[in-house]
Image 1 (cartoon, helix red, strand yellow):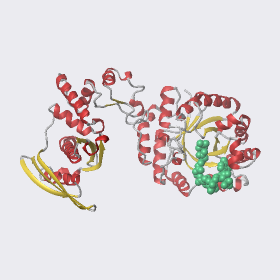
Image 2 (cartoon, helix red, strand yellow; image 1 turned 90 degrees about the vertical axis):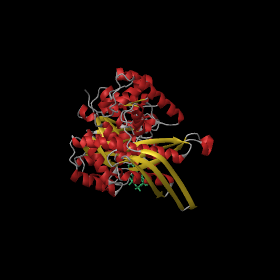
Image 3 (cartoon, helix red, strand yellow; image 1 turned 60 degrees about the horizontal axis):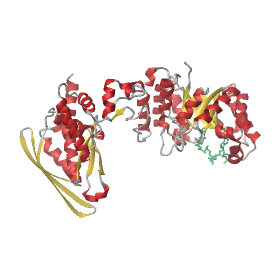
Image 4 (tube, protein in one colour; image 1 turned 45 degrees about the horizontal axis):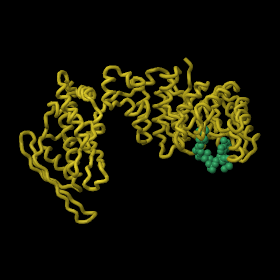
Length: 531
Ligand SMILES: CC(=O)SCCNC(=O)CCNC(=O)[C@H](O)C(C)(C)COP(=O)(O)OP(=O)(O)OC[C@H]1O[C@@H](n2cnc3c(N)ncnc32)[C@H](O)[C@@H]1OP(=O)(O)O
Ligand SMILES: CC(=O)C(=O)O
């Protein structure tokens, strides 16, 4: 099986993406995770660009004990009027003390004359001198031929001459860059095949996603003979991003028959690696992301769910476990009996001989979705609905009445007062509480009323509150959907409420959240700690 070397540039080109900024500590954590995944090279940064990247390499050399990856520092060819040994950028690059370095150089004549404003021969000298100098200092050298494909299309002889200059100087790899990200797979395949036949060194591929083809272009390049692939986790990077390794890796390993990670066990870490990088970089994860996204193996249509229950290959291109992801069955108005049955079993509810009950539950779900509920994003309310309808729920408290008033003295002076009457632990509790708004007052009054009989309620709190107007045309008379996210520090759950009145919708979601915590989370935790 042919081996493809992965060069992960999340920490260099990935940080050129808008909104991405990583601290040294973030970079160290990500580098460790990438090494655990098993990539061959980690391009950690551009030490000539800023002290943060210099600090990263210093700290990484001290603290990281990489098992699989070679740490790689990035820089550019020497400046036109400076000797390599006097070039400040190259000194800093060597100062990073990494076994491998990647240097970017111009491969498109237009860039040489327009961006650098030098003659074509001078650029070839810069490439040759730089590679020779870095090789003299014992580095493995990767030459990133910037704009190679655009350059090849405009002046093939010159683009190839830049690679030959690097080759003459002893370069280890030439990485062909689709820097502007506009090439098409057929062009990439043809040009890479030409290069592979014309140079003696190993060829790599570095693509950008401006035409949403970076993954396809990378795979085409590998099929044409490239043996090093550059990319970033989740495809973050300059403009529309870089080639997404989270898609390239499984396509290489599972579809095309190449090996790029140490083992299939490593491939199982792909989803957790992608989510980890998203978390550390503080970027909202893209649910529809192939292979590693939350929705990548989420089945919603009843016909799909019925078939995957019989054989998962009917609607899945690979087994989710191969990349460390999981199959999910969604409950919605598009569900059939199979969705409901599969979800009930996942909640631990026996469904044997209960098809009439399941049919009633299914009809109820469809009716509620028609009224504006959406259970996909509110798994706690969904479980409560299942348990209540199937008679598997013991209510921890009962609400008899609730009232909330808001007093607006001025924009800065708003007070709400909530009064609740509920039954808990065999007693009727009557409580009043104030808050800085109606939802805050309702949350406070419910906690206060429950506190004596269910003191554990103090361990949970709300973390997010979202309101969505369901039919904007009806303005204030429109229904609203409230989604509340809660946590007890270990588990996170979401509940939903729908009404024409935002306070009523909030109350419904709030009561569901506390019911879920007391009736489901707490008993499960007690069960785990007693075993
Ligand atoms: C395709 C890529 O992604 S390449 C990587 C791009 N990444 C970055 O640019 C991020 C980090 N960059 C930086 O911090 C800065 O741009 C630095 C430190 C590299 C350079 O900063 P400055 O010296 O202030 O120059 P500035 O950014 O204005 O312009 C780029 C300079 O690099 C030169 N340059 C650009 N490409 C090359 C190259 N391949 N070889 C040599 N010099 C180059 C330009 O000629 C220009 O020099 P000049 O001003 O003397 O004409
Ligand atoms: C080297 C690089 O990042 C590019 O050409 O896109």
